[in-house]
Image (cartoon, rainbow, N blue to C red; front, top):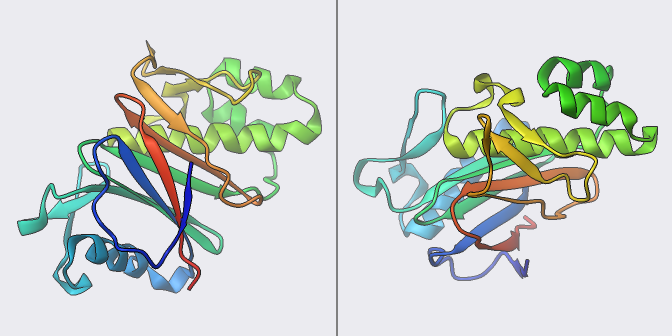
Length: 209
């Protein structure tokens, strides 16, 4: 996954390519960083961008710019990540790897039984990273489908005991046509990018201000 600095010409991703932006984020900024980045790709001002939301809250471009590109974004703590693509629907999720109270209890409540059982088999020092790998992977897939977390994290299953925690099934069907990437953007964060279809190159961009 190549990494490029932020001050580059923002041309739309080519087919088979996803741009992933990593940037600082403050809670009070709301959607401002997203709109500013979309505006740079679309060569318009942020004020002219109109978004609409699907039934489960997934945002997309509306009005004259509808369909020009697909995007998804996530923020946690002091960072945000934005995925930009053309010709594919992408989902991204990031989570700060903070210690979560009652982590195994949450896994038993929201994950598939085989996943929570597998987590309990791991050494304590591996449980936390595996938990967040599962959580971000599930959210990324659900956001790519547009169904959102309310669809149920247990409907997306992984194999947490295997290297890389690979995606196994989506809604009970083998995930053979799904792609998942876990770029290492920050050692304190877990990140997952998901989409349905053929493999694609993920290019990382970092915005430092």
